[in-house]
Length: 202
Image 1 (cartoon, rainbow, N blue to C red):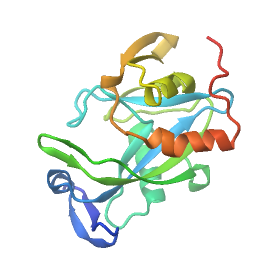
Image 2: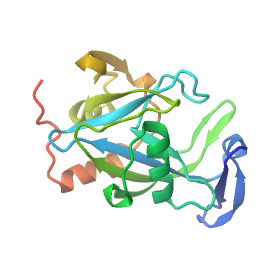
Image 3: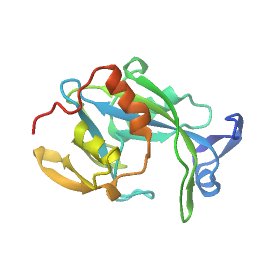
């Protein structure tokens, strides 16, 4: 049975529910959750590479975890559920650092119209014990400085650390689109915590 999502009007008042496919076909406003995972000891993020079998954006690199807020769920409940389902990371609500809500730019391509509010969370953890679900190929590490250069300065490719510390160069076109979220939500957190993202040595 297809999941149902709460949908909203332009004033962000709940107006009902709709199946997920209809939400993306018609561009109905809905809620999602995003999780950024940042190591404690150095400014390095964890991201996922989406499974080859994913309907949307297969093989692309994406945030550590994300998903829809099902009808009747709170963002915190949805985030904990998605972390367990996607990457097998079992945490509690107290481990989630809420960064706020971000109205992402609308995204449209043939057969897909995405209009959403992202509830953004951070988790700080070293050596996370991932158990990947079917939707995720692998988890990778990216230096915060390199991600900054891509997101803020427009660098076309950045190094990504794969399994066994192997590095590959990944084009910006292979990253899922979350335009502006890093600048609006994550950078202020790093600044508040006096986190020097340019401190990692090569």
